[in-house]
Length: 515
Image (cartoon, rainbow, N blue to C red; front, side):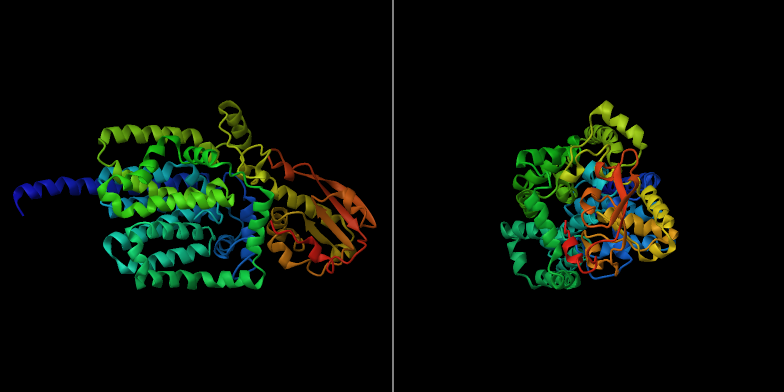
């Protein structure tokens, strides 16, 4: 090697090392921010439900695969801890940063491009929102990006083992949320319509498919044995149009805002550049995959956040395309994007108290529109409002239960209208000696009424006027709810039904609600 060559390589190595330090620094800050605010609000409705599901281990559940419920339940093994429940989400948020940077390096992007992609993965509000709570969507950005990374590696480096890794990621992701199927289909379409189609003929690709199928199989078998309840849930939402997907134009505007308005040029460049830049031609299939995934989601009436997981990969491709922009210009651009994220941060992270957040929305008019019918009327965001009041509800129900005569307590069933109420009673009520709650919604329906005959029912959020037709007596015990909770969980009745005129266990099939 000549002296000139050595001199030219050394600055490049220094730049790469500096970029690597910045990436890990961004990841560390991302983790710390999530960890610091993780316990500010209480446990989210769906998190409560996942914990209770996980305490009933199974290969699947009505409305989700088993991985997230089992993980949620494991975090509460030693007692109630909101912070520990959210720890896996904080790790997922931080891990997305170096993974996005790794995809840039795989595409031989510059050090500036590496840092750009890392920052974008950390400050896109939609991605941050997915990792604020532990839900089935929490790990999707990580899984989709990892899947894209290994497929890209297989295509551009002819790395046969990468297909196995892609299959492993897809299979594990299927055990967390079935949404990965949309990305896998989209990637298949992208490969089929580009030169990557030759990879679809390789045996290694199909080995990867076999790995994914084998890992997914237990949950799919569970669904089959129970009549595919997940599809019944999806069909209900589609037929009832409970998701506010909007037309394609409105949907795309929502995506641009959710991913940080000032980062839009980055991911749009990621979509366009493979059709223009020769060096990125080999990953043109990723651009087509984004278009295909968007078409699938909009056509199926999916929620806006169902597509958020695709953007880290597009940030990476866009960063490679724009990686030759002057470092000082990129620094100004990313600083502006970070400032823009700061305005959105209270919307996706529990930084402000409920009253302060309500005032913030009133002053800034930044409150996001609901993405489903259930979100209409949320005093805060639907997620934050659905983190309030659950402990108070359980305490109120426990007081009513303890006020019953001893003979009636032995017979009493606690019937909740939805899985959130039922899960709150089950999770917090264990310490108060409450019997297991029952509900007709989703997984609770399959757990049944636990032999209750209906002689005494404490009904949470039911219709007392309707139940008077079926009960010997209906006695109102009050209402539940707290400030800033969702409207359907505020000022709602709790009453005691005695002498139900039909046997609850025999009539249980009529209580099923899969949605």
